[in-house]
Length: 102
Length: 286
Figure (spheres, rainbow over the protein chains, first blue to last red):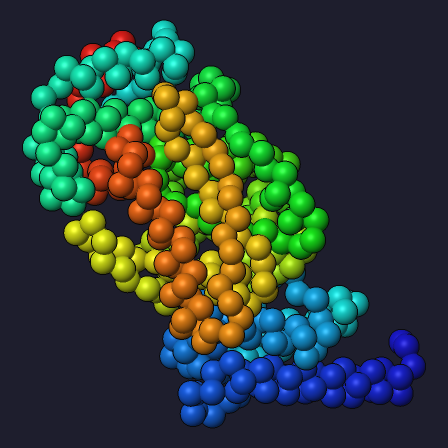
């Protein structure tokens, strides 16, 4: 087994990085949808039933999170799955960042 | 409706013109021309014949373009004006080709598919109706603005494609999209989706007004630059100015070119439209 201390440190770093990305997504949502007054959590839907973004709102959100996170998204990754909730978008950004798409 | 066989498309379109001159003017077409273009005899009958020909020829053109064994024949009737300006703009970033629902159906799209550009195309097909060979084109991605499961992401995906120097082909004169401008003209409410102008404004992407229009029984595919409205305008004013410029160009075609009024099929029910084009069947069909 690899060094358990390194494993633990990597896990903590990864968790912090995920939390940071989630913060970027939440901030972007607030800028993109200033009229949304509800609470934000990882499970908040970005479209209907949640933040209520329309196609122009999603456009603004995508460009904003890219700019703030430094992650270069790819168009084929913008799917109903990755854009379903704030948490899923954050997870996707985190994965992209971890795999070097900056 | 079957496709004529044993003819090349050019010869078929010539025959179709002869048929159009012999048909009595369709009452619904005549009423539309009288009412919305203020046409009167004797020009009205000629207008009706040309409008009928345009709709019938447009159907044949679209079907031929999608049939691999007839596609080259159909493409031989499409003349492409220079894409030099599009190419130049593309090398500086992405380009939007803003098409219009005028001229033969799907023809501008097929003309553009022939280019080797990295393309994203907004188009709607009935389920299973898109020819398989189109789905396999390696340089093209098709997005359906009418597909509610993906419509929300279409602008985001398009923005990333444009940012990478891609070309986006779509038509703003549609009733889809979350935000629209409605314009009253020619006796109807015309809907303009704000998706394309939103991309153009947000990314400062150059836009080319792109049409494939009948001219002397051939099709001329052109792309001419649309000037971006001034930056100082508010978002709503900017969109309105963009739609006004785009609409001025479509209005000009509508007022002057009866063979390119594809949208007139919507004044007919599907059955009536089928009946309207029945005289086409007299040209040898499969």
